[in-house]
Image (tube, rainbow, N blue to C red):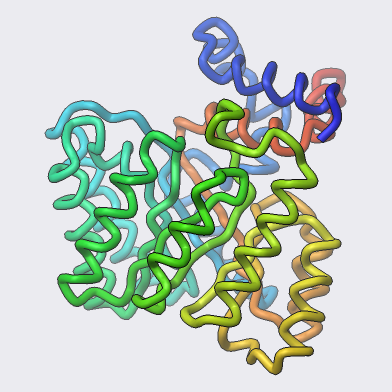
Length: 309
């Protein structure tokens, strides 16, 4: 990552916490282009998008956008909302699972609070034949996230997975410690602003670590969700799995709603499973800012929409 890109990413992520910018974008963001990345502010709007993606041969996940809930009662209410989402997915017959953030489910109110809330979702999903992905957040929350994941697995739940971020130095060690569980893991580059003490500052190092994590996971067991829009990495994974005789039932590609839809469909036509992460909700601003920071070229898309009538 060059100096300009690092500076742009840092600036965009710092704006994610700016209250004035947040209020302004909250009023105008959907017109400016947030709808490209967010499947509406309501579940009904999201369901329409999920149906369309499924009809095109893509599988999906969805999440109710939000994070940083510090009140246990509010977190429990969000858990109830997610139970309703699981029931709606089943009623609609959608090929969709859930991805959840532990801070949305009360991690900041206590680890046991978040674990209890996510355990209810995993149990309901198991009854419905569905799956829950526990998203990974900032580096300071990795230990708690992995502890909760391990607790759920030790309680006998196999329909739950989590995420490792290749920009963190620690991720290979975390991966190797999880391998005996034959986990379902999503490998991502990472979308938070982290200090160089814990995260690779250079894009080339992040990319190399991504490939290393993916190869370890693909070779040593479990199910691998390769979450990237990087064509070079996608081709590498395709060639690696073919060379090693790794079946396409052992992995999938994951991409974001609104990012490289043509590539998503092309991979499906080649016989690969492709999942599109399709979030919804009114609290979309932090999510949008992280998408812009991941690929600053997306800022140009938003700027162009400023001048559209």
